[in-house]
Amino acid sequence: MEKRYDIVEIKENVLADNDRVAGKIREELRRSNTCFINLMASPGAGKTSLLIKTIEALKDKYSIGVMEADADGDVDAKTISALGVRTLQIHTGGLCHMDADMTFRGLKELGFEDLDLIFLENVGNLVCPAEFDVGAALQVMILSVPEGDDKPLKYPLMFKVSDCMIVNKIDAEAVFDFDYEACVERARALNPEIRPFRLSALKGENVDEWIRYLDGFIREWRK
Amino acid sequence: MHEMGIVLHIAKTLNETAEEEKITKIGSVTLQVGEVSGIITDLFVDCWNYFKVRNEILKDSELKLETLPAVTFCGDCEKTYPTVKYGRECPYCGSYETWLLTGNECIIKEIEAETL
Image (tube, rainbow over all chains, first blue to last red; front, side, top):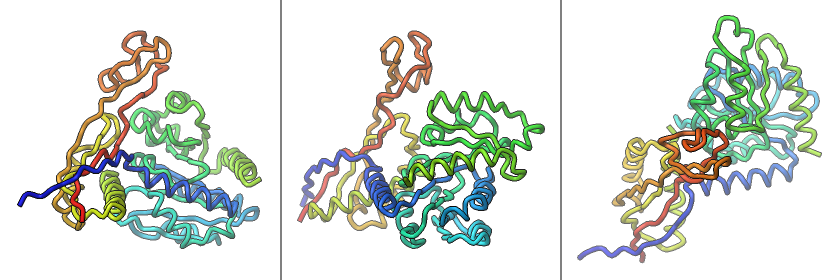
């Protein structure tokens, strides 16, 4: 007997369910007044180093939590929890990004109601994390000098969805052919609102400018 | 490699639909994929085939892909042009004040389903 199938119209964006969960995260975090920041970059761009400097500067002011998302391992979570902030290591099981559902589960596991500020250190990748809204209040991407100033041309979506572009490792500019102005121009062509920073998380150069901005953003958001 | 993640999202949506509509089996899934959606279709099909045999409702389903063309609009001369061929620069007036009208979609259009 031939199988009979009915056509069911769905007409739904594949990431519609992700965006629904991201919306739910925003609602919950608004309620608990917890500012949530999504930190994205390639592996080795300096996400953890910048996070350490940022936490050291802000931990007396805000109660901070950190979710470390990696394919495997817990090296970053160990480093961060040594700073005395609440830390959760999330394993994506090989998946290249965090989606809203994984993020929500992570937030519940971490416990967010009593925290002022939460960072998600997303999986090291310039492609996939840009596709998935995780419900953050601020999207921050780091581009390190050795990666090159042409990255906005190669990974445009990351620069389109980010509120801040942090050019890190400027202490290495002398040995790399990195044109900061050209990089900013390329990023702005994709996203005129993007806010660039130029710093060295390792040496501490210009880190205070980033901290001042972030602190202002958090204060404004939590008002 | 976000293709696997997208497959999981589609499966989740379809399993939810199946529950709501009392669907027991899905015969085919039609997806509309924009030319510049960033989805690599070969890779996507591999991920789909890997996943579907592990999912009761989807295991015998056929995946149908429809490509949606990418079209860019020029804010200066107000013409539209094919994105893949010309990129960001308007071929009519050379402007970079251009934005994508269509082409980055990934939509589950419809499914063929067997119900109770």
